[in-house]
Length: 297
Length: 221
Image (cartoon, rainbow over all chains, first blue to last red; front, side, top):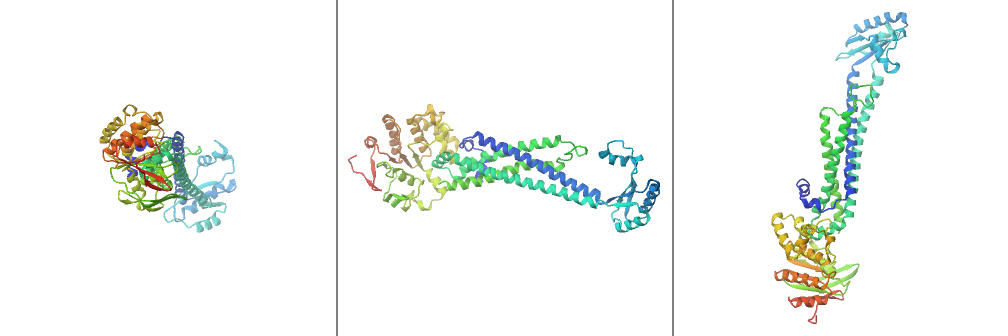
């Protein structure tokens, strides 16, 4: 408690008894800033992956596409037959034949704008939305096979599951990265504290000579590092949030990295990042310094 | 001290039997390497006897915790020959260091500090950094730091080793004055002139370390 008091209610002397080493100070500050920047980006990546997985799960789980690929002469009749089958299938909330323009838009990323698809032997696509009870997939497939042999029902499971799995893997990797960064922060603080105490043996000797307890000496060192790590991580978190803010919005699907941002309550993590830096560096530096001081007899 | 011994692998001090009463003035003499510094370090808890019983202020050294040693040092002022200071703090801040580490009231301390700086003749040097001080000024600053907590005991290890005779006299007068205030003073030195000079003003006893043990020296000094 005494050491926490020394940090939050600073005695001018606690701050002064340890000489300021420009290099160590700058290193702690900049490393913390860089690490906080990485953590915020990892968080953004995790949240974006989570949103993506949710979005894919939710939007694709209850939908399917029926593709009618018949010779041009039979295409209209086969499409009509397919629509007829769908209208008589229980568990389907709605279905809709995609317009030519919509199919054109789907192909645009691959073939460019204004593809004359009306001149091409393109299949017709029917979008299906199931109701809360769902439809009998096997039964529908059998009926289609019998009545509309050129129709193929795609309920998206083939590519939805790998995509959702991939999104969750990215989410996991994001959190793993955050854990690793904190591990690096703890290791760094431990090394920096050890280096600082080793290079200030004379200071420790003088402080002990005048009656300083190990807690007092540790607080003097810990305060320096914990506060620098805190301010460094604030800068890093701020820099990362500005960068995220300037990234293209999720609506702009044509741009890479679109959607890599924090949304709503996720922005509150920007407060937790510097705070957790402070707690981790405080505890690490305190444990390391007390351990070293015990060994310096 | 009852049968106190200290060994750095090889025994340096043995069978020390001694009692130092409050308000007394002692000199500790002996050749270099005889164990004067070790003797003083045991007194302020920097070294723990390897055998025997050492009690300071009635507390046995074998049971001292790390915190207890720190608190003990607040009651014992120590002056070293090499005057260890924090070179990045000015003289006033260095002298006030014992008060800061013990978290005493800062307002009353500032008054004490001013008086103390005046007493040791360093008022004009209060903002100077330790490396800017002369040898005598450093010793007086070290003495001021040693007594700012108003300790009961002052231990000085070769305090005049690096300063001229005139400055040595000035320093010893300050220590005599402190002894007159009731403080116990123990000075380790091999400077016989200093001992003779002091004995002219105060009833000082001389302890001589010889053959690993301490003996009370005769009146030949």
